[in-house]
Image (cartoon, rainbow, N blue to C red; front, side):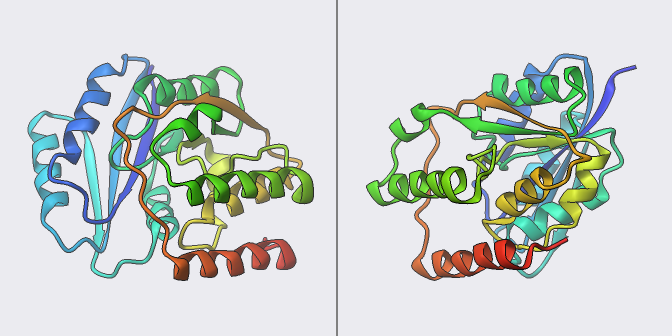
Length: 236
């Protein structure tokens, strides 16, 4: 029997054609996996989420929609989707499928073939050759240096938005508390500190048409505080 996989996709005011990327990926996917998509509408104010879901179901692609009115952040949204999952394996990425189809499938294949509890995508140096602002490049490289040299994590690209895990990994993911950007770091940090979990990494690539959003100073300051909360209080 094919392995059951739930792909959790958080979204906030996605573009009107977001469903096209999902359908293109589903078409590319082989029959090795029984896939369901769990779309989490994180308080969107435009109608594009429901419109896209309608188009997906017309194509007989299995999809579930979780929706709530207040925008609470990507970490919060993903926990709602992961909590609702009933599949053997769970994978999450962004609603626009920014990583190549081959990268998403590589994470799934590694999760199955290595029996790892968690597989995290890892972006190579080619990531920085995309259309990024100099500040964003500096921020990303500085954070990686901090994780490698200060925190001593074996995984330095904690913020890659493509990860998969089994039921053991699911339990750890649901124990995270950060609602916005650093939920990824919290998840990997807790996973690396747990001797009962095995974690693997896979190099992944972004699509050429990916557009990077700027990070507001207010959010950057909030996430800096969250970083120290995670490290100092070592949340369980």
